[in-house]
Image 1 (tube, rainbow over the protein chains, first blue to last red):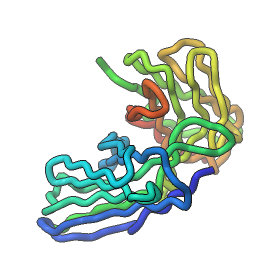
Image 2: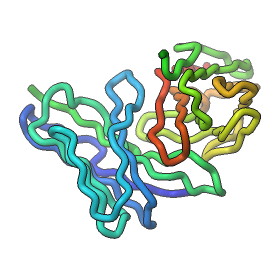
Image 3: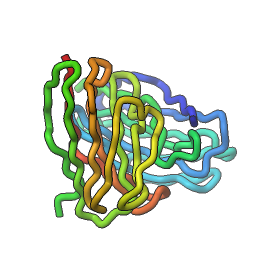
Image 4: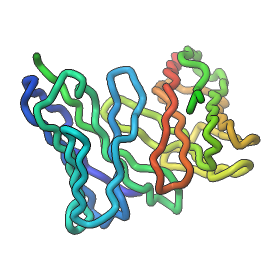
Length: 113
Length: 112
């Protein structure tokens, strides 16, 4: 099935610093979704990117889809303690015609006050 | 509007026991999914359904069975639980495969 690499696995930042997580695929993607999971919680949808080179913003969060539609990034400006959690990228599952999503392994964001 | 609900929230099984996890959604979604989440592994698709009466295998289907007798419910069964099935199980639903997925709160299962 589809493989998607997400880096880094862990990121420690001081509150107020910026944070970026990257998602890379070996094949061209039709779309990519991003989810956030708070500790002990469930994944919550953040955004979907569809177009080549697309950039979308949600307050302090900036999402980008690469020109070749093989990579994506999530950037958070001036992190706050409420940003703590794991951020996952997810791409359409392509194994044997199955539906659903393939998730990256996630980036754990740890914020030190 | 409860969204996606899962029962039970926690369960401990002994090896060889069976159980059924229930997922229910009240958003009239056609598509429903079962994922498992293990430390450092992200979420992996177990089985899915694209409508009432249909089911299909995902990435890691072995050891699990599913049923979708009603549109709003998606059941995940373990016939003979194994320690390797210790995990957190999430159900999700969506309008279509290109829409955002809504996740339930999860079921934490431990198999001893």
